[in-house]
Length: 173
Image (cartoon, rainbow, N blue to C red):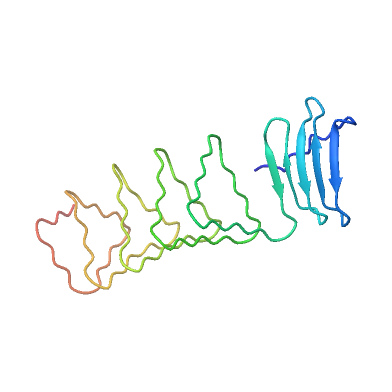
């Protein structure tokens, strides 16, 4: 969570130079020591402001569009926070890759859905687990295979509907 920084406005005339258009657009250059700022403001309230420490705030009162006709590269040495009060859509017309040497976490208050036109593959270097608070089901249009040195099924009751082929030993206690 984050908040919009407050302006560092504390101007001392004549160190503040302001140009204002007839309709109210403003360009301001403030050279007040320790409060140096540059601000370009639209009469509807949108603005870009540079603070004394080099920080930048851009605020758009209407819709915002950025169009890159070639590559766009962003390198953030600190943290990145993105807050969307409405919905969010990401469309990538080529391949998409997310890589981190640490953890990725996805949390939803309701549902998470993943759909692929061909295959979905999940590989864990050590362990993998799926936990459901209610019913867990696996449905396959073809064969479903479990391959492991040992398969353990723990259940109050196990039901097999349809034929079952077992190769190897079945141990019962």
